[in-house]
Image (tube, rainbow, N blue to C red; front, side):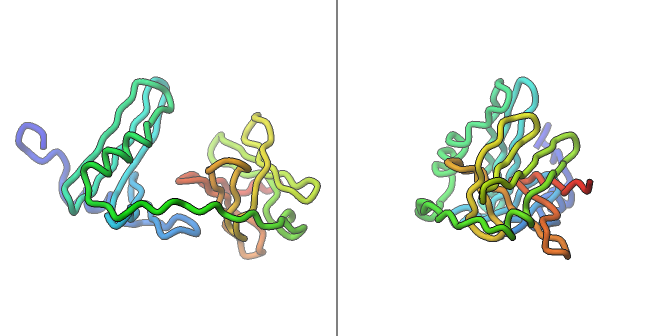
Length: 189
């Protein structure tokens, strides 16, 4: 509400918060600018991000008429633990289930051939390098970091939580690599 009137047309809100694309290898979806998912028994729509000088995270539970907005004045800061705590205080969530560590699976020569390559999203580039029966992720000009295989579609940074989902093309080779809501297309050389 703004000056006692709706700021956005309810039809626009419904369109924004309706699924328009599925995240690869996930039950979650993407609307127009909003991620749509189930969080411990509650349907939520959310969006986070940052620009130079600030970070934001917005989480809404429309059926419960609850909205949580966190704004920071620091580049890249979105305070996910604060968002989660506010969510726990405001909503009746099911009990939190601790994630079990995922087993690292062996990386085969077929995996290396299927996944290695250069991928791009706008001006962001990542490279997946195969070497010594291992895979390494090289984002932009940053140093290589080892990847661990969790399934045929999911890889993660060794020792980290960031997951990369491989989407195969018709030839079986990786066509895209997704990380969160970012997808990187294979660069044909």
